[in-house]
Image (cartoon, rainbow, N blue to C red; front, side, top):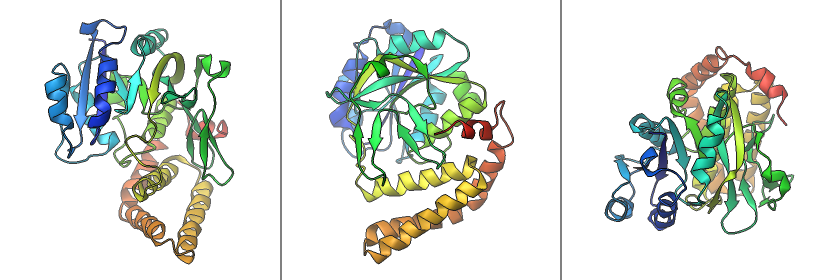
Length: 320
């Protein structure tokens, strides 16, 4: 079997009809791909709906919400394909989505991952065309536009610029094809990340291992961005900011880590001063979590700085 498509799901029943129906309609030989849905203990009817409506889909049941990275790791170990394709549930793929990913992957053994062109819903805007990584430890969707204060985000119009196949800094977990043996060899996603930045983290490890990440504009899907998570919520703030700090600790020069932690600390204090107590408490909880997991984080940093064909500092110097 060539590909195992893995869909992580948490209370996403309202997306699954379009997502799975589009997958069953791709231009790819039926017996050469399988669909796995890994369910993070949803409280809606996702599981029974898929089992009754799409019996060919293999459903993997988890007894709690394990987060994005761990759920993918569990599903990958059960996948039968040579490649694993990760796909968000709030998506609808076009016919050549899978065949284009596989064709690009097969073109060069040095490619470790291939990511798609994710359009923003039905708009002519680019939601994701790979990841861009910055020297301050931020990751951003290639195609996203963010203001100077990093508060407001919009998206670029699709254009000829996004029609070029090219190597990119990283992939987004919304849609990516990865060599399964390489995913297992690199021990999958780091489960220190509950959600967010696990794709940036794995992208770094792929590059350190000497592999390329390629963006394929012919693999197109439509993504209801934040369909499965609300970027204005305290839940999003907690996990996105915590994961960014974990990402910093694992890889970045010590002076950058100190600078960004000081910035984070002053953000927390400023939140208290402005009486934005919900945000302030979440940031305090992040600091407590980091302190409780300090030993694990130190071990992760030592491990990541001790292996790889390519040193992180070389990659860092090439960042934006």
